[in-house]
Length: 198
Image 1 (cartoon, rainbow, N blue to C red):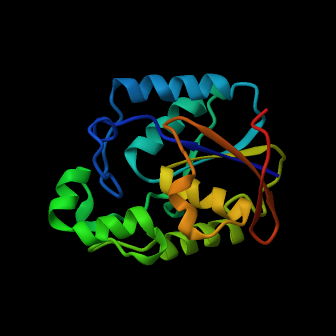
Image 2 (cartoon, rainbow, N blue to C red):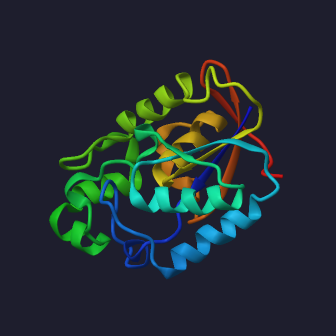
Image 3 (cartoon, helix red, strand yellow):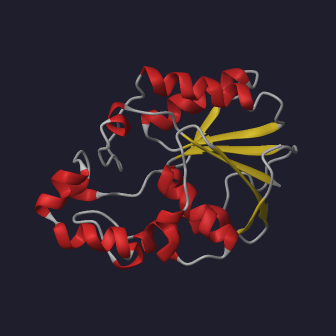
């Protein structure tokens, strides 16, 4: 089965380069345009199930895609939410550097070793994604087709690491642009393999 991960469109905080995490920030005008472009690019896909993180930026993006796919409803799945950046949420990198210089260095150089102050670690976020893959919401549903999951940069990067069997240390090496589509083949038991978006 093909699992298509899509990152939500841009928000004002993306443009200001602020850590968003679990903050519930809406899309900006550019983000709405990105969501529409992503929806248009997926019009030929045979999507049987549309999932989204509970955060507004993901739900709005999923709504645009659902309309484009013939009125497909969105099913919210908490496990698709962004990494919890804790006290970093809402701050720019310069603001984080002023308060947590050592933690920021760890995040840049050894992301697998750090926990965000008041938030979670990459290990915890990875376990949440693995639980989603092992016990997916599409199991037991009738019908065939792709599953489209609108999520965030963090979970999509983690999915890339799982698919490519790469360590958490390489988390920051996977690029996930707003609106980008990342296609995987899902296997029973929670395995992933990267495949073409076509």
